[in-house]
Every structure is written in C-alpha cells, then in structure tokens.
Amino acid sequence: QGLGRAGPSVTADPLLGGLLSPGFDDRSCLSRYRASLYRQPSLHNLSSHLVSRLRRYESLHQLCGPGTPAYSHAVARLREAMDGHASAPAPASSNSTSSSDPECSYIIWTPVEGLGNRILSTASAFLYALLTDRVLLVHHPADDLNDMFCEPFPGSNTTWVLPEEGFPIQGIKGLNVRTRESLGNALGRGEGEGSAPWLYVHLQTDYKPDDRRFFCDDGQDTVRGVRWLVLRSDNYFVPGLFFLRRYEEELVRLFPRRDTVFHHLGRYLFHPSNTVWGMATRYYSSYLAPAEERVGVQVREFKYARISADERYKQIISCASRESLLPAVDNATLPSSSDHHHHQEQEQEQEQETKRKAVLVVSLNGDYYDKLSSLYYEHGGAAGVTVSVFQPTHLGMQQSEKRQHNQKALAEIVLLSFSDVVVTSAQSTFGYVSQGLAGLRPWVLMLPVDGKVPDPPCRLASTIEPCFMRPPHYDCRTRGDSDNGKVVPYIRQCEDVSYGVQLV
Ligand code: GDP
Image 1 (cartoon, rainbow, N blue to C red):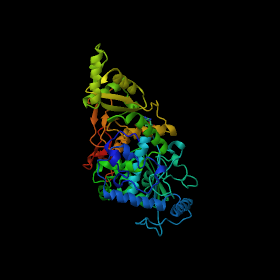
Image 2 (image 1 turned 30 degrees about the vertical axis):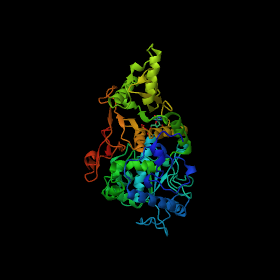
Image 3 (image 1 turned 135 degrees about the horizontal axis):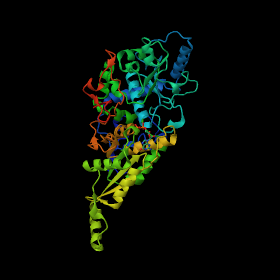
C-alpha cells in the first residue's frame, strides 16, 4: 500500500479501540477500516461508555431508520398530525429502543455553509441525538453532498439520509429564523411542552435570544416530546450542550476528557466515500508517503481579515522557523563549489543522514505553494533535511454547492489529517476538522492585525477541540446576556475567536 509509516501499519487497529462497529462490508467504504493505516493512532482515551452508547445508537438506528416499519409508522403519524387528524401524540416513552412498539424520535440535520461548518454541526447534532435517544437523519437537498461520505451506521436495511420523497415537512431548505415552527418562535408565543408534531431548531449565527433557549431547560423541555426536529446550524454547538445540567452526568461518562469530543465523534462519523478516499490515498502514496515527516499547512483567507499573499507568506515562514516546524534554508548547499569531487563527497555524506520532510500546503490560493517550493528548490534545507512541497489543488474560490469541489475539499481535509504536524488558520472550521481527525493540537496562524503579520505569528492551540464560534451568551435565568466563557471551568473563550467558547 506504499505507506510511509513504519510502526502503525503493522499494528494498526482498524476498529480504533472499539469506536467503530465491525458490522460493515468493507468494500462499500474502503476508508472506514483503513484510515488507521494512514493516521496517527489516537493518543486520546476512548471511554467504554461511549463505545457502548454508540452500539446502542446503532441498534436504535436499525430499528427506526428509513426503510424500517417503525420509520414508516413515524412518518405516517407525522403526516396525520400535520393534517390535524390525529389526537395529540403520545408522550415520549423513556425506553424508545423497546422493539415491541418502538416510538422513534428524530433529528434531521440540514446543511448550510462550507464543508467544515457542515461536518462540525453534524457531529454536534449526533451528540445531541445520543443524549436524547433520537435518530440522526441528514437532509441532502442537492447533489453537492452525494458521494462524499459513507453511511456511518451499520445496517443494510436502512440509511442516515432522509428520503425526501413524500416526506410531510416540505420546504426544509427555506426554514429560517422567522419560521413559525421554530423553537424560538414557539417559545416566544409562550407555547409549552411538546404538543407540536415537529419543530425547527435554528442554531445559525443569526439566531435570536429565544432560539438560544435551546441551551436552557425550558427549551429542552419544549422539544423533549416532539418526535421530529429539524436542525440547521453552521456551528460546533457541542460546548452549549455542556451548559445543560440534565446532560452533564452523561457527558462526563461519555467524555471523561472533554477536549476529545470532536476527535472521537469525527473519527466515528466521517468516512470519506471511495471516490474521495481514492483521491486522498493516491495523493498520499505519490507524494507524502516517501517522507519521514509530514507537515500539513492549511492557509485560509477571510474577507474580514485581509492580508496580502506576501505578508501571509512571511507569517507562515516566521511561524515555521520560530517553532522549528521547517528547516531554515542552508545557503551552503547552493551548487557554487567548483570543487566537483569535494562536492560529490559532500552529497554522499548528506544522503546517509538526510531526513525527508513533506510539506502539504492546502489552500484555495496557489501563491504559498509557489513561494515555499521555490524556497526549497533554490536552497536546500539546513541540517540534512530535504523538504518537498506539495499542493493538491488551488481552486481559487469556495463553491460549496458543487459536488466535485466538495469532494476535493474533503480529500484535502483527509490528507491534512494524515499529517504529523498541522498548521491551521485561525477561525477556520476546515482547519478544525483536520486537526480533530488528526488528533493533534495545531499551530494556529493567528488573524492578521491591520493586514500585517501578528505577533506571535502562530500559537500552539491548547485543545484539539473546535471553537463554538457563536455561543448563546444567554443567561437562562435572567434571560439576559451572559458570558459563556465564564460559566464552567472547562469551557472558556477560544484562543482564535474572542466571542467563541471551547472545551479544554
Ligand atoms: P471555513 O470557511 O474555513 O470555516 O471552512 P468551510 O469548510 O466551512 O468553508 C470553506 C470552503 O471553501 C470549503 O468547504 C471548501 O469548499 C473551500 N475551501 C476553503 N479552503 C480550501 C482549501 O484549502 N482547499 C479546498 N479544496 N477547498 C477549500
């Protein structure tokens, strides 16, 4: 398989310590059991409780997922309730996995924004599903998410993709902060606990104070008995779930180390399709495998943080040299010597101790690759290190509505996750996903200050967890503002987003 890693490929653990279920036909999804051959093994403990909850979730999904009698029943009841024929829905049973008469509840995730945002909100929705015994379904309104990910849950009788045809809730794409059925608007009207057939949970950046009550007891009480929830979020809202007392005990059992939530859920849920896996592994074998060390550098540019390519390049170089991520260039290796014989000797000597570093540059922009590869083309790396620089694509601009564009973006996230060292860009969810899947604390290229390199140019993140960039900052008791970074000791202000909070 042409793998660069010596140890792990022999001892690799395809099921990741029990995180993954063995119940899949592995041809349908090559990445599922092969990621362990490429990625660093996880250094982060996996709780046996999480493993058993995942298996329990998988049984629930097999019982309630699309294609099952329970699913047809649940959809029929939803339709009746929406048509107003039915009597009030029965209260949620505490044991929804009972197979005699399963009463299934669902949370439908629907996409918004780029791939990084989508992956993080899906993982958050899944954790919520685990905590509340709901079945997670994903709504794929367009072609842009097809052939991206494998089915994460076993069971050939079912799927996690919402069958849209004949589904009673129409117009999911158009749901927004003003939608009548949103939780926030229901709470605003003073509607109490669970009589609605379905509710829309709006956790997007523009959410209002009443929408934020999803992270309060009254919000949770209101959705508890509602069998169908539709959720749209562009955020990693996992830290918000930790504010809810009712989930605290379970969350602590699932994640005794709180800073590994996305790392484990991400490795559990997101297996690239064979198409994407093919791109990532071909690239890896061709360019990255021969190196002893792989350094991934993700450079993201945001309109609100303008910086010239020259200045950004300076930032990368200054970060890399300050933190010894890349070797300094060695002018002595320039082929200036006229003593040919002597030079050959030197080369032979170097060959023996040469260490190869591969630098994977991932960006929409090709400039950084150009500059970095010229640097190491024109000069050798000092201290017997050869540096090769690669960049799979430079697509110019984001086009999240195009499938092939998203496939390439995912392949690059996956490639970054094979790195031994990662450098990411502040405030980028694309970067968060890569570091989470890699299980590495990244060196974060901080936002520019007035278009210039900030000081320091980069910082080693103190957690591998993504940032919840738009937390509620809402005080459930006073219904006023609050600072979510100061409520519990293990959730604090993000290092790269002052408004955001993260688990540490
Ligand atoms: P964020 O905007 O950095 O938080 O990340 P998102 O993934 O949510 O949105 C950015 C989108 O732009 C990605 O999903 C890709 O479609 C595209 N994109 C951004 N950077 C890259 C890159 O380095 N490589 C590729 N292929 N696409 C990128």
